Image (tube, rainbow, N blue to C red):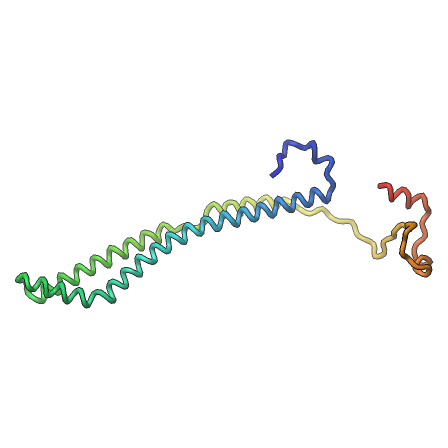
Length: 177
């Protein structure tokens, strides 16, 4: 962005150049705010994805591995001398604790996901600045603008007759500005 304290060059700039510079700076500002929002959202999406993966792994463990592993573990515990019913209850409790642990990890990861606060604050600040800017009223433009006749004009004879007549002094004065 330009230095607001350095106004030496701004006196020589035309209105078109000033509008073009303002448009370019506004475009850059909007582009930077979009980039900031993308960066913040990308970080939160990554956290959410890790939480989702942990929850999916917990569900997959419960659904696919539980029958096979529970039977194997229960019969293994039963071979140690414990009753078959107690063996199955111990195995089920172990899988339940594992699912609770993975569910807690997923919940904590989801809890860390926050809205993009920097982007929201920046957008609110920009909106507040832009609300104070009001366009200048434009003068009404007449339907038929009078153009000075030039020596190299392409108007035909009939069109020249219909064109408004101006004195040469006013057309010379206008062409010098």
